[in-house]
Image (tube, rainbow, N blue to C red; front, side, top):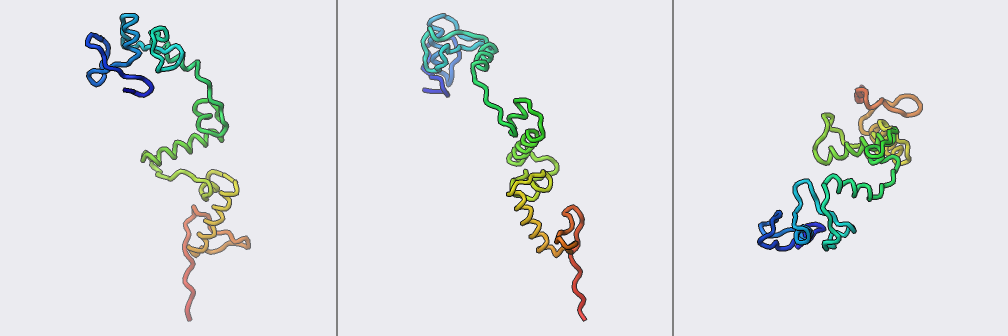
Length: 186
């Protein structure tokens, strides 16, 4: 039987270690106990020297403190490359530029929205191609410019907003906008 990467075997009646589901123990714990006569205490782990968690022979197992074991695995793990403009670069690699900070905030906002842990504002996360991405987040990619243009055109057509000047702009969205008064009938 398996439990993740480890094998569970039926424990002998005289095994003093922890039993799982009443009768099973980890195979590497059993092998170490048979070879050395001790089971790991709380705060200790049995380490596979070659890194293969299924290679359970006494010469491949050693007893270590949990902290020492974690340190060994962290030092042997290759570091991920830092990609600029990602949440990972901001949180774990210490990059504090505006692009990485914004990426971290956007990812957190998306997580809050998905899990229902919204802030008081309750705003949805910004999405590329939306007018909020263009207006508030100052993204000037073609997708966001086009999204903003479409929304502005729809806003002008649907709400009957009074046009200003020769460029055809409308009142800013933040101002209170009143529809055009009805045409006088004679």
